Length: 427
Ligand code: ATP
Figure 1 (cartoon, helix red, strand yellow):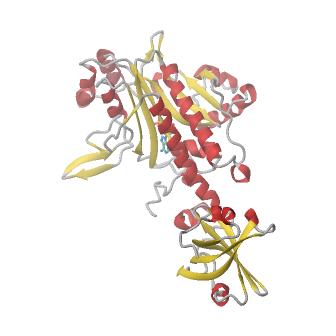
Figure 2: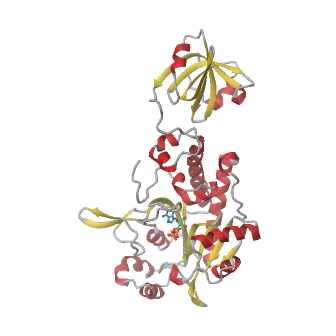
């Protein structure tokens, strides 16, 4: 008997030989003198049969779903079995039992999301949820590879910070050895700090915290943000190209890893290398709402219109009004009411937001004041711009948002291991 463990997916290559498998019982049927087990491990599943007369028959009959077992047996070709082989067991041992009934029947679709999240470890046993976790990992991996290939340095910025980076109210405060501190909403300051060092290109996939009372399907209080910043850019369009490429690479990687999308998720999005670019005015006209402000509903309409008109699921929207963007955004020299900014809308939802940054010290101070912020409380930030800051720009792309849109998930909570929202702090 071979003692090395064989994975379910490897069994066909052991046809005629002996194997030892370990995993979970994902199905059990007792038909007359035969017990059919479906054994699942990280690679997939395989059929195991235990015949009356085998020493382990009585034990096998008493197994139930989600028991953890080890099986030894012989691999036989069997046309009717999934994968074309089955394992005829000579030995079955129970590594651990599972209580009955399971609090969540994860083999069924249509379980309420809250129940799934309450029993997340069980929910994550389902092939669909495992595919979502895989998609997150593959997307993150592809993004890292892309940035590395473009000469970006990966950075690791602090998540406990002394001051809210954008002067916003959406920060979680915490007590830091008796002092007030905050959880970082974004690595904005640190990305820009790195531009002042001469590294020129940086990226991070890090956690971002937002104390926003959103309860809808698009927001989390803790999400992973893919951030990058790049020096010597001509304008926001050049910055946006990296975001488009990030989305393209993520779509490709997820599609490849999931072996097409099959019945689980429907079709992957269509993302051309050269997607449509519209400024806010053009985008509003396209959806027949001149003067609109690209609300979530308008983004949805735009998604549909762009698909219709350009055959693309991605659109770059540019030149958002100065009133809607943070103080560090560069404005259009010819029209100060607009900015050198962009959002990437994928399937009707914003997945990325970026801009060329204002790098001129005096203009930056004036812009802070215009936003009603006090430059003296931004001294730490402004100092970076006094001693040789190159022109630069960057963006933030929500990893869970991106995966939600790639897979066409209804709720962003499905695209994160353990969501944090205003109600949920466990598991
Ligand atoms: P929104 O308008 O959707 O609230 P935002 O304009 O606040 O987003 P930014 O601060 O520009 O978003 O963040 C950049 C990207 O980070 C967004 O495009 C999105 O993908 C992601 N993101 C922002 N906030 C959240 C959140 N609360 N939960 C999940 N992802 C988020």
